[in-house]
Length: 338
Image (cartoon, rainbow, N blue to C red; front, side, top):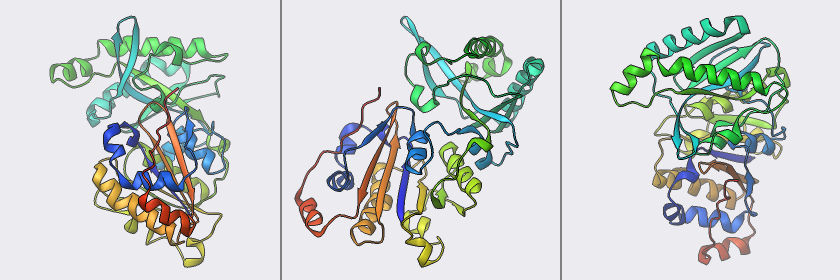
């Protein structure tokens, strides 16, 4: 079995705290140099599982969030807060704390405005917004996790249909600017929704079959992607909770024969609320122990949080490497964002 630990946000942990995690030092001793993926954590996962980096995220995420993409062209339409910074605009954060009533109001307004354009919106959860359109556009869009806290203008849509989508984004910003929902949020000190960030577009028919045998995923957007991938590939998935660890995640997976199949990957998305200490003790240390004793053929850590993503891949270490790693202090290198 090959284990994939997908850890969103890990690279946003302070560098000194990452450096203090002995398990990451051990992984650096076992692994090849990290592979940077500027297109984000989803692209890194897709490449590892044998799909193309531009595999559409949105229809899988919608599926994993409990929606039905059908045959539509679907995009992630994340509510975001943007702010001016000197002579540019930054995409500061995703706004994922809207109430159910706020989501209903904003979606109703957007649907009414864009009905004649064939653009429809759905908010399955405050952190799971999507848009559907009639036809597949010729447009290139930047994943949200690769755009956060970066200047906005170089990341706007490109392609033959880019002008239309840029116009729609401007219209959405104007519609949101004076909306009562934002006035109320600002009065309560909450981040306002100043725009929608479109990305990850495609249809479910455009997704290939990944080499995945099991998925365990926590709640949230990265978990939606993993669950949707499992459903699309016809494999089992289980829900992770905040107090689960690696043993809970893997002990329910299949028969021994399937558990140790070298062609199958188990994709696990730990809860986003994990502290560095719990990430290390509950996930990384047990994963490395399983790798060292041969329960895993390979361990892959995929993480983001610094504007891009990185993948660290390690095969089962030889006995000599295991002995050397006990005394080694190899730096856990973090790929820099492009």
